[in-house]
Image (cartoon, rainbow over all chains, first blue to last red):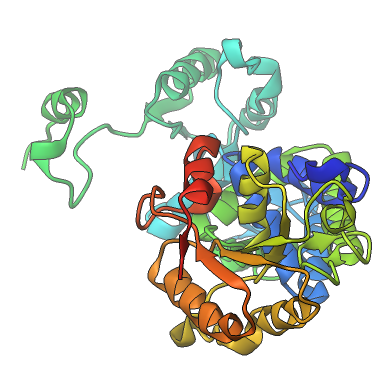
Length: 205
Length: 205
């Protein structure tokens, strides 16, 4: 783009911005171009503020040495919170999943963030996930139950099974979040696999 | 977000990044959070490169003093290109529209970028568009025809009519790109053949 009329030299900065924006997930050439023009139309303060926030976030945030969630402190606030129990540990794929659970307010234990799920074809093998750190964490014996809350996808299920086999040996209870009908969902529109699971895992009232 | 467990202090950088990303068009809280986590997972080089490209683009690109398209030089390459005719001028809403016409290869005249369309309810009145600059440009009498190529939307049509009335008095031929463009469609996303037809079938206003 922006190479019209032999102007390849004059629009380098725009081309570079589009190229960098395109590296973001879900952003193609059209979206990147649209975002670039938006940025150009704003005041320079916005460009300064946006670029500073990107740099600051990347430089200040690192993985919490306990749970691997992103944190500005060496150990994150969730891991330091004395009001949460150490006995139950929820293993999630991403910080976004952790946040979803936190928003629900239904979990009072600790978390462990894997930063992905096993997907060998995409180059995601066990070495790229924070599985070793999880094993290390379990060695103290404080954790009584590990809830595997990876996504209900092929990758998430595989990851859950893989981790379950790895950590089961030392007597820790290992559970998987339940499959079922989402609250507020309509049975009519749900897929057979979900309905099958919902029937299979029915609970006595 | 990221305010769980009383950690409001420790995740300021992440919150700020999400807030800045949310200001981009079409990016909501979920997308912004996803982009932020993506940036955090990449090498620091990417964060540096992305933020530099944003700043550089904003600081280096300004509006061309002739056509108002974004350009690093005071006058853009398109306006300086001696192989194009000065006699026909294509008025577009945005730089992306200009690029769409350039990609079609069906137009050899000059452009004028309005940077928007009239939409009083959204605060877009004639003072916010580059209409005065267009009038100034036409004073020399070199331009024999103005093709109004604003989008085929209510705002675009209104803008075309408004400009047509403003500039018609001095004998310049004023045309509107033909319908051939689907009504309600966006120029930026159309193929070159359709855009070529639209230019070819332009009608006198």
